[in-house]
Image (cartoon, rainbow, N blue to C red):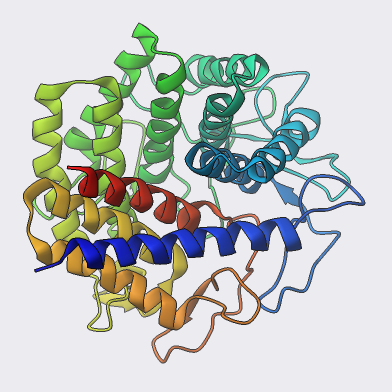
Length: 402
């Protein structure tokens, strides 16, 4: 039986970790020479000042420091969010065609100019959170513009859902992939999950009827197409008509979706749909739990076709486990889920935190050796880990107030 004292200890540890994470980013990643934030740091905090700068990284920095300010009221966090906002406006917004570039070079000049819908969604996510800090109308206006561009150019009017990517001028392209490891397919779970996330945060500041319908439709797309009806794992890739194009299981995405889809349903206030989603949330959490190791860590991926487990434990699935299993406990009160949440944090403390130089390492292999990946990069951001801290601090506070 977990006591309020134990929950309070969990909260205090996460408050401390949030402070440490944000301090790391403010201390190590601000690019005073070329503006914005550095595009890459390695495991030992070595800066690569000429590395490209990614829109996803910058949008996630914007979201993180905006959300941290909204939680704490710390003006230093708002100042860092302002820095991210200004850099996005000045360098990532395509002034000719609209939307955001995937990347710019270290000087802030356009590099990869394709319109990846995933990137536009994170810009909406960050801008909407920033608006909640200070009612910046430019941020709200831009978030709405990006939403309209996604609906205009990416929305599939025949089959529903969103096409992965388009050219700089919104034309069809051959290579739709988010990264080299992804399948080159028209639709993906990952993009739809984060479109849902971005749209939901926008709805908090702009409760538009058309946006409500798009969020509702996305929730049903997850129920009808993306969540496998037998296994309750997420299906990762599809063609235009929602035919399945992958058999990889991503445990981290399973547990992330378990709470994000529920959050979106709560945001739009559909109580009847929410009851259905809560049942599905627990099923998603159970599916994700198949990837838990005895040490509390969550394995990365499983290839069902080849019966092959990728024996790596990346940092972001541990962060999502902390929230997703806590959410399952809140739904049904089964303390085994709360235990899984705490165990994910304990695993992270032991194996993922860089106790010398700060932040979280990318991940570890089966024998706990460090993976030689970026600590800061196109994909390695302060979003998953800071969000786990922010989300759980809020949730534990609410539990204690009951």
